[in-house]
Length: 237
Length: 322
Image (cartoon, rainbow over all chains, first blue to last red; front, side):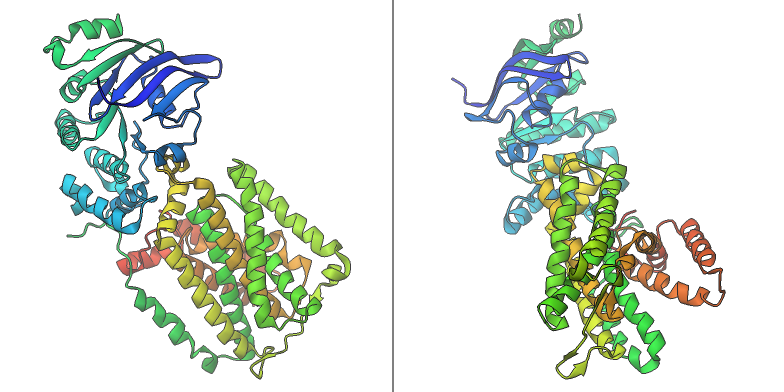
């Protein structure tokens, strides 16, 4: 029996009259990296936005260790331990790297925040060198590090990553994969949306395939033994 | 190793030299120039409070003239109706301005933004002006309220020199308070709301509280400036808090540099002094004033503070708007 951290049941989300998620159900196990796969418009990013409260579900349930999150405001969901790194990274460009990171720990005491800051600089030494630079002056990879580091400053139970490789070179994608490896080794639970299948299968323990707003397939990445063609067919055909 | 883009903040003690040096100003002034310098201190606070909301918080709210009037009338009314000495009306004016800030923030909390927020807050200011005109004996109507300035520890408050030292103290404290606010966790959150409100909420920050706090602080600072204005002029009129005043205050914020504390001081000083210089050209004052403001903004779109930042990195502020 697996230890379930997040349980999504019969989740429905619509933009106006257009239904995006139509009864999606899946679980995220504690300590794993689960990746959501699917074609454009299948509801992957909408799933993440519904979990962290940017979009209110029309019905269904999002339970974090038994606590219902569906319908709560984003800042309340964050307080329950769910942090998201969005596709756009949502950094504050005029603020320094350190200010951006500290904002991630705004709800925590200053001594805990200082400790988290030291841990973040250990995880991403390059950010320590850039701590006083406005984030708009950083490269794409460094900005992604700031976004992930900022989300981790709150010591979340669950980290949502939306397209972490978006707009990054293959070399930087590998860096992101290494960061995910480190986070997994530290026991951070990750729910990731990733179009780059190489990265998705390199980093994830399990996958869920979404199609037309429903979870239609899923399994262990290791069990695929590198044969990802069936999944690709399932996603796109 | 620093990079050119790296932000560096000035050692704080350097800025404490300014008010200390300013203590000597009355030795070199006549009553007229002292009167103008006192006005500069008042408008420094008005500009600072305005800049916190539009520059740091990034909300296009034009309620600062309303806060200014609320503070001035609160001071004059508390002095007249309750018989309070002016000094005791100062915190009351600050609180009244803060209450005005709280009211104005309600519009922003309801999701009203940009031009809509501008119109709603402009209407708030005009509504307050209507109230001052029509509230009868309470506000003195169009004649306004005269202020019995009295004295403080035996020093006559109608003396421009005495006013200067009180204004210098209040301005220094409120500028230092605003700098500390902007450097604090709260200040980071205020700027974060400006840059991306949704992303700020996603970090567990209750953006509504941040917005209210910025408006309330702005109202408090400008409300105290209102009490200073009441003492400075000795009488408050509804017409002192109209659209012309608002436009001048807005120009001070932009000429100084949006969201910059140093800019608020520079903008207020420059645009309080400028009308005195263009007075030498009767009938042409407004034209000269307008052209000079336009030229400054065309040459330095980020305001006078950006000029100082170019001169030395010690003038770099963490939270100004680039």
